[in-house]
Length: 442
Image 1 (cartoon, one colour):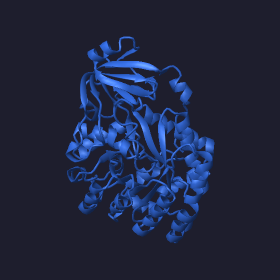
Image 2 (cartoon, rainbow, N blue to C red):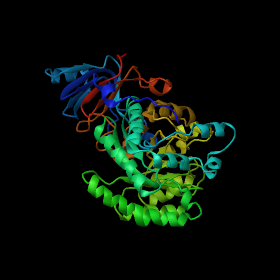
Image 3 (cartoon, rainbow, N blue to C red):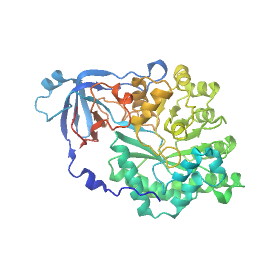
Image 4 (spheres, one colour):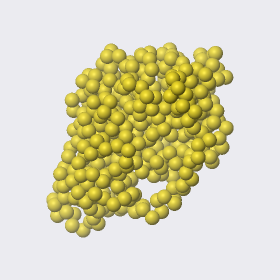
């Protein structure tokens, strides 16, 4: 088993966290506000830049934004935090991760280098099932410890909010164990987490020849059990998303429809894994059922792209996954943007194909392999990513009334963010009015 660092949250942040009740962050070289609605089509990349910008924070909320001299005169008594001529922008949002798992799949990485495909490995009992076996046998405490490290790694690379899925149990007790870990991680912080139930991530070995029976089990037993458990344990939160891996070797289109329709009838918001390896029509199904997002979208047809563009469903691309699989084909981002989709980016952090929760690197890949501009990659990782988890009214931009989730980067031009890769450019994170200082500013 891979050896991971054992670092507690308290030991990492004990000396760098400062609660900000009132604070004027000033002297930003560029304050990227991303103000307004999620951005679609040709509007993608509107950063709302305020040169020499400033932000006023009060009690975990953004109160005002403007130019530094004007804001300093307007709020002369506020405590000050200089951005030292660095870029200030919304915290990054990762709307597709598999944050909670046990073990690793380094051996499969080597197998892929020897010529085996992802689906070959999955058919041989590897892939998702390998992680399922490890996660089922893991204790709650060990699963939490491993997952906390993943969450901290994401946070200190600038991701202030993330969606995170179950899906490595494929039976209700382990699925709920993963959900419980996610809720505890969210409560402990600093990463804010929105959970997703992915009991339909794969057909487990015990149902390998009976996929329809397992589909029925998800619909008739697991989803009602989840709703009952949620009412007892997390009733103060909205219901989690329900997701399905619609793919050859996982769940076909009729099975996916049955699961998503059952979830919708129970009141769950919907997501879907679609068109990663083959086009089965999952993106159009997502649009039809008003899913919050359709994710992966590598093999998505123009017909499906147009269906997404006509709907409220966010198109989420995960470029770390084809990169991790050493594949040459990525989401047809330009076709999606031209069609008018609301286009977002996510990391797909997972142990099999993309052990990478770094949204800075995700943006770098999107620019190089999908032709996004730096500004488009930032919008896709902030306001549009917020829409992919239904949180665009609360986070994703720097506007009065929104949650004070900001990052200060050790660069003075936003184009540096995807231009540079392999290093963490985040110097300071502000999450819900708390400041986490990582390094000296630029």
